[in-house]
Length: 179
Image 1 (cartoon, rainbow, N blue to C red):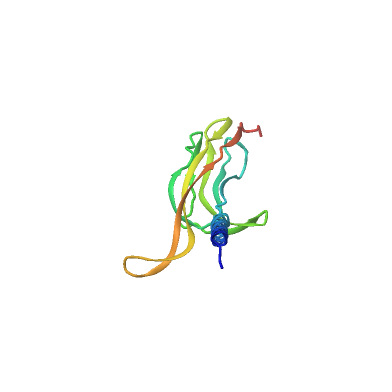
Image 2 (cartoon, rainbow, N blue to C red):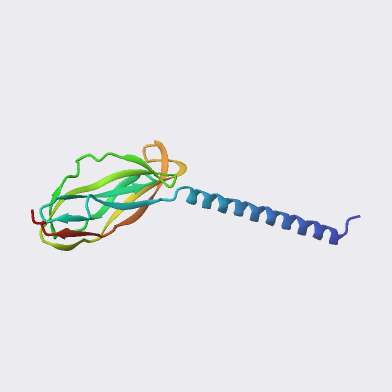
């Protein structure tokens, strides 16, 4: 003979077990999402490379804005290179940029020279090349396959915008030393 109290207890235990399994499943799903997010972190920066930080009035120097990134770029959204007014400038950026690889602190970066300029000072003194900004769009794969309107299957990618700043540079320009 079964008592109603036993049935209630067994139903209660079954509900508790189901709730525990559901909670465990939800936690596992949450952890997988966090692992996916942390697995595709964008590490990118722009390094300003100057050939000389101290020049004479008649000297020339080069400045290169170099992009370091761990993830492939989908496109450049907006570019705001610094306006250089204290120097005569000539743009020496090649029409096709090469992508090279460089390791920094055991992290492999893709390196692209965004812009290369040859500069000649206009006047004597401490000159500052101001900061700038570049906005890039990354296509980060989600790992899912989706179908487009024509029935073709391709990898789904999430679009992410990243704005990087170009640091200002100080260059000292000296008068010609007497010969």
